[in-house]
Length: 98
Length: 426
Image (cartoon, rainbow over all chains, first blue to last red; front, side):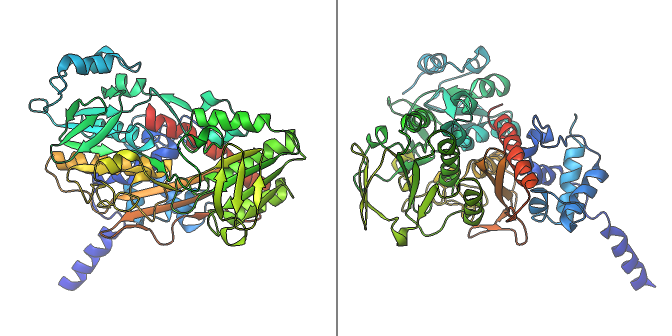
């Protein structure tokens, strides 16, 4: 029984892994600013991503990663991040005031 | 020694200053009381970004940015000026916002060297500025050899530091006769902006095709292959068939000497008399890196996780001058490195552990023609020995792509430039 409970606890914690670390979230997001604007506040045609919903942005990034969504540049970048890192990035931008 | 009055004179003498930047300054030959001071040397992609992000991560620190010029002309997009697609003002930026919005103390003066032993930055006029940490982003210097000396750039411009050189090469191209020979000498590795020379040739070809169609272009390359080569050559074939001749080093490209005044380039096989020569010399770290003892060979070795110099403690080197392979030497890389360096410095100032491993990136867009863009990108992680590309990430634009893809990338190139400039200077 104990083994089963431990196994269930492990599976339960996989879907939204570690707690959000704002320092790591910001660090991972820094290189995005070059194209998307500082803090995602784009002043050009590249999408404005500051304040985007966390789940939506995470979903978009995962879709670029698994090929469901195509793009000229995004797939190349998201493949440099683990799923957990992409979640941190999504949370970072979701917290920015538009 | 520099006292408060002289320091303020230096500040007031520069255009970029506001009153807020002048106030709160104490003697600069020693550190401000109870405060950290980080001095950034060099106001390009690396230095300007470092100054801004140091303030972001350490708002209580005094951040000083020393840049000899009051305006900065970007190499990125300078090829569009040379090709007649944009005016020089398109690539011109200043330091006013960094000073007024972020309270960065901007000083327009020439730095002689960083004195790591005494922890001061020494100006050309002998005055010194004490620092807790220093960030050095000195860019590149040229190897003067084969008959190309300081001053030769007035005859055979390199245009590899933007501004007056960009204007000179533009003027020379516009003044060339129809039927003239335009020669570029492309440098050996490593050098700043690997695709840069080939984007330049592309936009020169676009100008020549439309204005001086009987002319020809020869690239004398000091190496045997180049960045995005397949994509460039596919584009040249499509847009400028028969106009561009590329000679690799092993097949006629290797230059033995140049006569800049008479515009003659000598290869192993022949003397080429040109009407315009864009001579891009082989490169090394900026001069003040050598003066400061930061160099090993031609470039500056660093701790890849923090960008602290391996040779001088508390001095950080970023941008083209540092050895950050496998990152290319580019503006995007410098901006990415500057943010990480600023973050790590801020953590050290607060006695926190550094971020490990930091993540970095590079994206290089090139315009093969107006509305025809190509790119290369990568994501990196800094490990103990070097900066490694994250496996599976990055890549090139696809070959034989639709015009719509090329157009989209050309538009994203502009999007990158506009957002990048905001991120660096505003």
